Length: 156
Length: 144
Image 1 (spheres, rainbow over the protein chains, first blue to last red):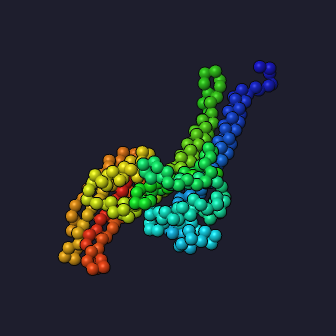
Image 2 (image 1 turned 90 degrees about the vertical axis):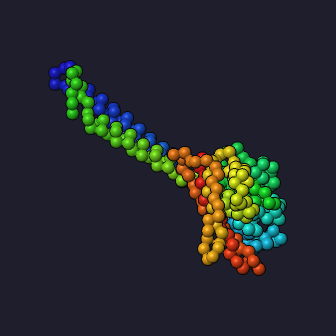
Image 3 (image 1 turned 135 degrees about the vertical axis):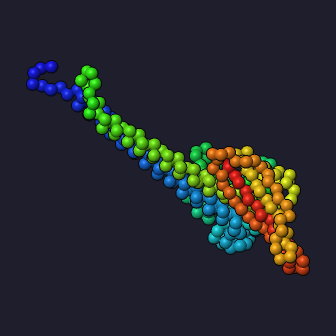
């Protein structure tokens, strides 16, 4: 070491460590903020999908006999009693134009819906099944006196 | 600040700072995981509620534990486990009397997050269902 010059190895080392920690902190902060935002968006979609399946399984729709006047439908409901699916309403939903059903469900993204008995026999399928990640809901109801699953995938 | 034998300094402050950052990250990660947990439990609660509504509407909340267990097993599917406690009451002399009880399914694991749903169903008999006859109380536990 030359006289008069102080080479503060400690100082450089400390600065390096500090910078690394700072960079890592920023990276972590932004990474988790991103994760949080994605998780919040996912949670919101999940709650909307739950509310949507609730509306389908608990209410008859609006108007109550909407299956007879599909053009005047304001809300889709499949129930004639709590968690009992009305086959006529399910058929009317199956026959409804896809974009119209999406609009009535209040969805801005694609969906795929499947109703099947618990033995796996498919009763009805509607929508566009995709490979990308989806919010998946599985609800239980009674169709034609037999337990069935109502499954809804909402894509993001 | 402490110094080692070769004259290099290790800052306690720096170590403390790193520790704080790690703690912060752990807390953030924990929150993130907790967030995911909440919605899955809402989903399970809804499913438990659906199952009880379906059982009640199909009239399967019977004293027959085998039938009840089979129905539950079919509805819950392979992804979840369940336990149901059912009590039947008879309305006699102005009060409900316990007429029987059944528990089906398995006990939840200690660390499982269990969703619970309850329901009471009253049944009537007589002319136009004029007389209160029975009540079924059921509590369903679901977990993954």
